[in-house]
Image (cartoon, rainbow, N blue to C red; front, side, top):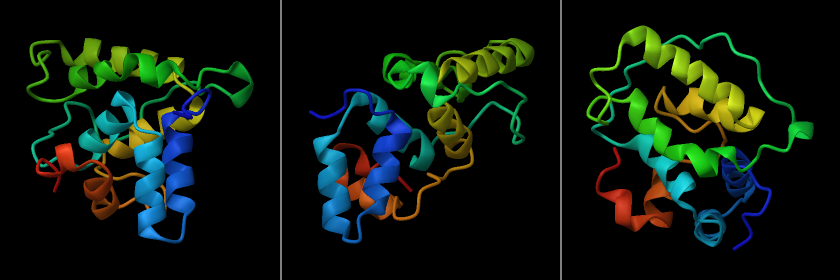
Length: 145
């Protein structure tokens, strides 16, 4: 696997840059990780209802020099905190939102922007469509819109 020092956002951006759908799918499969599949799932799943405001919160983004590309890969399970039915439905709105801001501030800047986009049901890279996601990850395809 070639995931070393590539953020999830970098993998998705690179996959989207390929002209051919087959190449996009193959690149995603070659760089598959639990975090990558979780991001795709939370972006496109039919049953995901976010428990966060629609507006982007104020936060301080990390820069490339901070070398935190692997943080999302280590903490992707936190996504459950921010969706209905993830086991944290009873968490107070304020605590959830503060936790979300803190998490965003721990992530690579590109990954933080990606997380903000998946809340809106999209992956912000041209070429990264539901169709591509379904072909790359057939094990979660049935759950995607």
